[in-house]
Length: 227
Image: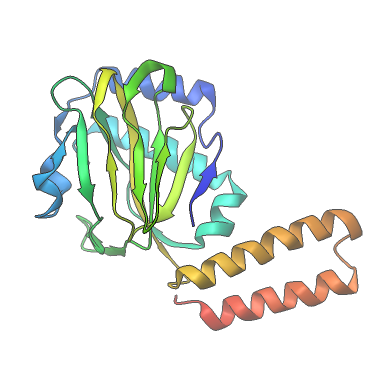
């Protein structure tokens, strides 16, 4: 499931993030790559524990807490600290790769990468190229979102970032371990939750159909949750 989440960061927050990024200590993006992806990765990245990263991580995580659609779709158990990258100039692309299955954090914790997120921090008009491309059996999906918008996608998808041929592309990226490990089960729960929200708006919280379906939703979540 690919999900486009709009305005995770407001325009003011995007401007704040860009101001921080303008004076940040960029390094080689290969530092967080696995063996295979390091061969095709050519971008810049902020050190995870620098002061600028800490400021930006809080900004992004605060934005996620305001978005109920994100929690409905991801059912997050753990979220890895957001990282920040830059494509432009000579360091401008990331070839086909799949994200590592487990992200090891510096505090000793591990995050199973059920889902990946890219939060765009540059407007599409600021750069050429730089599409996030998702490979599939029959077609490819090219993604280039407004600044402040985010794409949520399965961590097992092969993907790439096409070369940035003009301008600069800034983004945040991170991974989520869900309470519900199965992608199919998460999708079913998400679709049910969306229908429940619509039904509540039409008939109210206490309608017997709403109560019954809410009970079914939570019983399925209880059955499938890995906490």
